[in-house]
Image 1 (cartoon, one colour):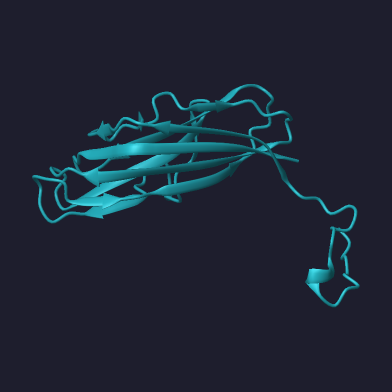
Image 2: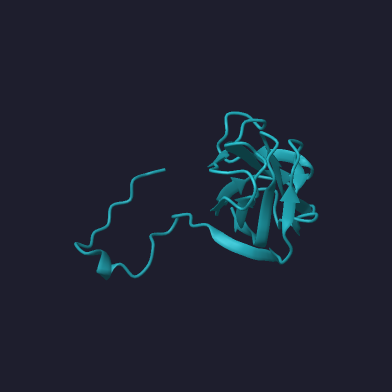
Length: 167
């Protein structure tokens, strides 16, 4: 792409972008708020979004920006270091694991002080730009698992927001 030089000395003088400058546009926004909590006690991944949220991209070149936010707390029984794994799934396959080294490596860590009550809360947020390359309905889900025999409660609300970014 060629370098575009503005002739104005001040950005406040710019009233429009030069032709040919590509800017992304949001085609649609799908959001869902899960009002129920989900308790996880297994090291196996479990869907914490009750089936997820679907979006139908208008073009195969569109991208989908996935936002996820929740609150969770460790309910004890996990020793002194419960690990929590959270991953984004598309169509039943993991596409993002929150920056962990592998899909089976914990990406959140709770250091507990006891083992009988709610010990620590955390508020993870994920933002991931996906390229599904389809115009078919596509479902995004959030899965979680725990380590160390922990007991983790993903409280409400749990939000998923999907935005189609047009090419």
